[in-house]
Every structure is written in C-alpha cells, then in structure tokens.
Length: 289
Image 1 (cartoon, rainbow, N blue to C red):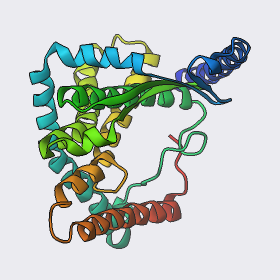
Image 2: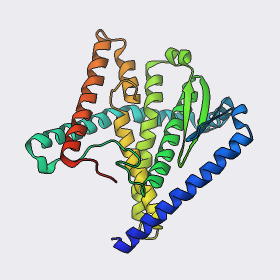
Image 3: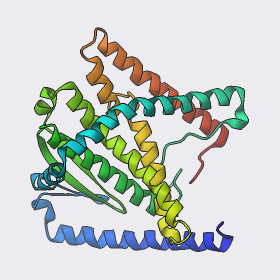
Image 4: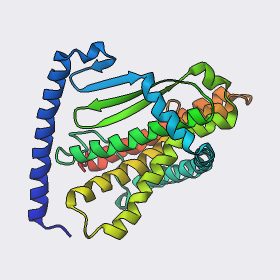
C-alpha cells in the first residue's frame, strides 16, 4: 500500500510532468508554424497536430502481410466476443440502474471521463497517455483488417495532441460497401477485441512484475487496463456511430424492419447510459479519479 508521502510525491511529480509537457507542446507548435508544416500535409491547431497521408498505408500493409490468417482469426474472435461484451455491459448497466432504485447502497457511479473534471489534473497525463495507446492500437487494427479483407484505405493519420497521441484510418466507402457481411463485421470488431486483449494483458504483467515496477509504470498500466476494457465494452454497444452500431446496422440492414431495429437499439442504449449517468450525478456528483 502506498503511504501518504508517496501519494503527495506522485501528485507533485504528475503536476510537474504536465507543466513540462505543456511547455514542450508550445515549443513544438511554434516551431511547426515557423517551419510551415501545415503546407507539408500537417493540420496544425493549438491543441493538436494531425499528419494525414497515404504513405502511412505502407506500414499498415506490411503489418497485415505478416500473417493474414492470424488477423482473420483475431477478427473472428472479435465478432464472437462482441456478443459477450454487449451482454456483459448491458447486465452491468441494468443491474446498476436497479440498484439505484431498490438498493442505493450497492449502486456504483457511472460517469464520462472528462479531463479536469472526472479525471483529476494529477491523473491526466497518465490517462491521456494510456488513452493514446489504446486509440492508436484500435485504429491500427481497423486498418490492418481492411487490408486483409481487400477494402481500400484512403489514408492513415497520426495525431499528436497536447499530451497524448492517436491515429485514424479512413476506409474507402465504396470499397467498404462492396465487402461481404463477415468482412465488414471483422473490420468493425477487431478494434475492440485488440483493446480488450491489451487491457487484459496488463494483468499477467502486474502478477509477474508488479512488485518491482516503478510507480509511474504501475499507474500507466492501470490506466491502459481501465481505458482498454471500458472502451472495448462500450464501443461494442449497438449505438449508431460506434463500431457495435455499425455491426448491428450491417447485420440488420437486410432484414425487414432493419431501420426500426437500429433505432430501437441506439435510443434504448443511450437511454440506459444516460439514466445511469443522471442518477450517478444526483447521488455521487462528479467523482474525480
């Protein structure tokens, strides 16, 4: 267990790290503007920089070419696991909603992760670094599966934000529409299953090396576990824009009343989530992590 002295020291260290990174970002942003990187394929804004290029597609193609069969197996596992993920998160949300009404002492807070509000300033560097790793691997998975399934990728982007990073893959819409049912399902599912595996892999790391790891690495791995598992679960919900919503749309669009089923799923799950968040705010307020 960490002592109060350790906790105060970590808080001070995190704040100092955040300040240092903000200064480094300001230097990078000013240098990028002076070098006119916005004329060389970069999108430069005060809080983020985005490099979008087809050149990055080569990296994705090489990774996909290592073992297409392996990636298809991972995609199939993702499709199968999506049912369990949706079932599990639905059970958790419904059970928590029931607890708010009939057993308030057993209810747990459900809240969005908002930097500076529900994510404390001291935790923010670790949260954003962990989130960057999860988002980057998520998008990389989508890109790899697009290549494996012969779906054209318009461009791949790398994003640098103030104290995090990420990526984005843009499939060709026409090529995506022409893909088969299972190809689409694997493309949508692989990002979340990679996040799930990434989060779960931190457990054996903690078991094997937890006592010898630096405190900072322990905090980072905790955030990778937390963000990875939660994103994997929530992203599979059949809500319109989410990957789970895209999977549900792909599955139901050929069915009679498919549009109705899609609307019921989207609005039903949004209502379930907002009910949990509203009752959580009423009972607990914002709970900084």
